[in-house]
Image 1 (spheres, rainbow over the protein chains, first blue to last red):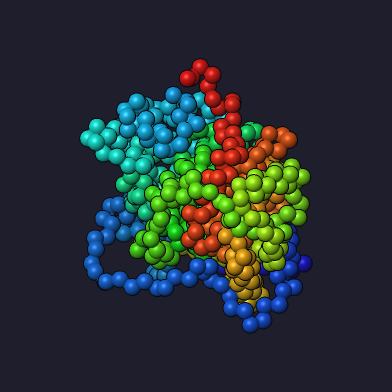
Image 2: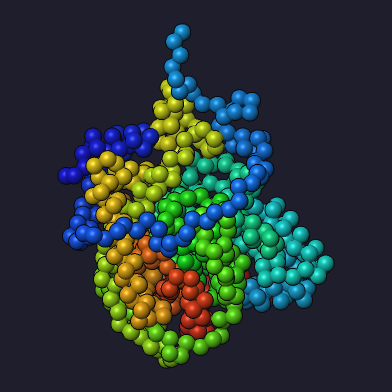
Length: 98
Length: 491
């Protein structure tokens, strides 16, 4: 076993996912099998080979920096789960001492 | 009017041009068909009837004024992954349910500039993650050739809608085969253009180094027509290639005498269905009879492609999907603090496969495993690209099957993700190499299920693929729409 429940729980935390306990069991078993399958890559010698990040190389295109209109505030906030005035509202991020 | 189902978009445009039919009538025909047949197929998540009528009316007014264009008044189904201003766009996920984009994806803007008609939003695997469309959080689309089977995925709704004649053409996306595999399993034409050929601005991202947009159509001519409309450089997509676009319809009808076709031996071994093999062999001899030269080649790293792909695509997905946090759009589930809110929102909003991939992708990128998995996969990707570079020194195009089997049963592979992943074994390497490839129908197995043939091209050489595909289609003439989806009363 490469993957334990603790690893799945830790990785889920990094990915900001809550998991139900039956999901932790399921993913532990499945990820272990999938990663074992992926180990076949280790049978290949890749010494000195550069990794590919993009298959078709494109040069970074430059353009003039100019001012354009942005979305209007109402259009941008239309999908907000919660808003306050012209802002997206979120739960407190920094605890305030009372 | 249903004889239009046997016409190309070009022929339909001729009828519209001569005013033998109107765009409004054409749109109504498709909307009627959707109403009659889609309750069994479930290709559409939402039909945008009002918009469709409005756009059809607008197209008719334009034609009255003498305007013309290759897609003017032509009704499309749209995979629910392209941001479309004012139209709910969900990626078949609960986390985006109710999301109304404030802007159009570049590809939607291009189709609007052509005055197409938007019939509705097509089902898909949630965030395009899957090979059967069973990962949609809304409904399971059925294969029009056998309603107990899956249509393939992730663009399963698009392929099923085209196959059953529920739109003139559809748009899909292909990250590891998501256009070609469903096109193959539903017996339609699907094109994944070269990475960078079609702008992805406004496409909801899954794996950014692999995702590409393309058409699903009933025939090769329509594929060429839609490719003309959607291809080209776009400054809004930094991976867009600044190269001119040929007129893809110009290569229709050119012969393939002397065309060098590579046949990779690795695509004709593992677990292939005997019927698929037989139909592939017949298809290759059709191409040979038309003057093509078949060359046996090897793509030696093929067996490593699936492992490489699922490391890279999950890593990129885990990063791309970080944006679904319940703050600016989509679902929010309350929590005791902001981290808890993120976690609960994502628990509730994402389906099983999406969570599986986020966990896998986060794992392969995490400290201590990055080199062993992500970096290693990048290096193997270089070897896979190298295989194709070698092959294209001797060949003009490559021909392979799209999938090792025909469409499987609903539920058959849902409990075993690895088996599901392996069903994309012949399409995945092409995305890793960024090449263009297309799927076209080449016959039926003993149970009457379609088999797809894959043509792989050199970077930016979609035109040559279309040329060969058109020759093949003209000779082989595979039936396009199942008889049960043709009304007997119509002309």
